[in-house]
Amino acid sequence: MNLSDFDYVLPRELIAQVPLEPRDMSRMMVLDRASGTLSHHHFSDLPKFLTMNDVLVFNQSKVIPARITFVFEGKECELFFLRVSDENEWEVMVRPGKLFRESCKVAINNEVSVEVLRVMSEAEHGHRIVRVSDVLKRDTFDLLDDIGTIPLPPYIETQEGAGQYQTVYASVPGSVAAPTAGFHFTQRLLDEITAMGVKCEYVTLHVGAGTFLPVMVEKITDHVMHHEYYSIEPEVVARLIEAKKNGKRIIAVGTTACRALESCFRDFENPLLESSTNLFIYPGYEFTFIDSLITNFHLPKSTLLMLVSTLAGQDVIKKAYQAAVCEKYRFFSFGDGMFIM
Image (cartoon, rainbow, N blue to C red; front, side, top):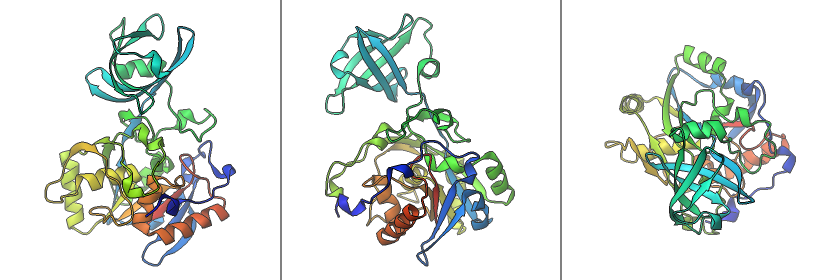
């Protein structure tokens, strides 16, 4: 199976640059896997397709302001905080890579500096493990809140929507990219769904910068996914197992919630509640836990497009994406949604 099998032509003007307001007024394509049919709605219509027998599973990870830009020794520099490795030590993507030598200290401003502990990788733009320190000895998350900015995907060309690059239910800091399928949910919509008797559960998967990296091999089985940390509370796992045993429909809100659930329940009898996952879902994979998926429209040749093609079928997804382009749906992070039933 080749990378070119997951390509499609997308007019540039269909790439959404800002979210709609209110967010649940975005469009929603409903794809019925049983019949292969699709229909067009607004996301606020979602309750019409849900019942008390459904469980929605959300990724509650919160995007951190992971990017810091500054000038050092006359050079424009950037730190992109990827993940914490040990207490206040972080894996950080740095630019320019040659400036951040092992054991060096780099001043960001009069109060904040970073110390490079060791070089992790030269191949991926100079990853470093750094210790963040300042005169106040603050937690790194506090530091990023003060001087960092939210990293937006490279296809978003304006910072106008940066303040809205977060789900309304985000609560656990750690992601450098948002679980964007959740963008369509407003608090009003969540309240309506809950009042119907639909169960809502929350898991955590911290989305890494690898989500922006393109697949660089033509044979997709040669691709290696990046690792991302996930965790699911024991009581949530117990309720999900009970729901599954009772025949309830498990609906993952987004590909990250999907990967967290599929990683956790690879062995249904021995769920793995917390781990680092590089699960790669492409055609041929058999889903063990989820039944349906709420998702966005994904980039050509991306692992996310491969995942939805696995669930719905390649031919069905090709047909759906062709229809979305013809109907001028809005694509990618701030775009419209799809419900794969």
